[in-house]
Amino acid sequence: MYKTFQGMDDLQNMVEQAYGVPMTSNCMVPRREVLDILDEMRNAIPIEMDDAQDVLDHRSSIISDAQERADSLIADAEAERDQILASAKAQADSMVQDAEDRAASTVAQAENEADRLINDARDEYDHVTSRAAAEADRLVTSGNESYQRSVDEGIAEQQRLVSNSEVVRNAEAEAQRIVQSAHADSDRLRTECDRYVDSTLAEFEESLTNTLRTVGRDRAALRKGAGVSGYRSHGEPGRN
Image: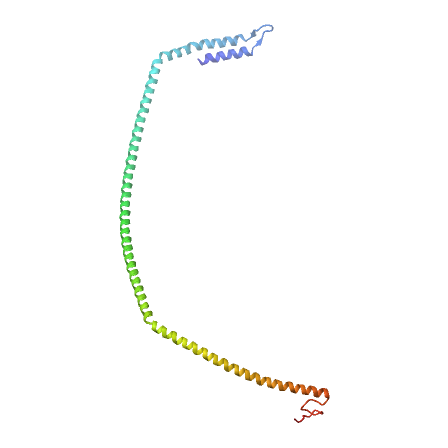
């Protein structure tokens, strides 16, 4: 069949490349070459026809072999598919079982840990509650004792103040007497001081008067040219 198609292609190329006859649509081709190509095509056709007939005769066998091959491939593929599915299912079941086992173990551990924490919390609560109750009782007792002690001290202080009221009155009377005595002493000292100041001022007044009198005489003597009183004209001290 290949030679037949090859001859057709050679004839087509030869016609396309041939010289044309002027004024017509004809062309000139080499006769010998065309005849050789036709002989080759004629000789090749029976062989290719025989090959085609052989293919037609063995079509059923070829189709049957192909069908058997396809069936075998399909069967192998289905078997492999079933095997893969079975393996995947087994692996999935194993993974699911493993996950369930791990989940159950984790849940059990979590429950045990939760129970332990709850018990610890209860123990801690009881311990703290008992300590708080004991501390509260101690504080209440201490507060009551402190309150009673304060009340007793207040009562004792009240009684002491009541018992000391007479002493307070005596102290106030003594203080009043001391104040009055101090006022009397102050008045006496003020009177004596006034007398002393008055006598001192009187003496100073007398001395100042004598001094002024002497100054007046001396000024008069100076105006008269007789010199200062009590002195001579030549600077010697005079006689009184």
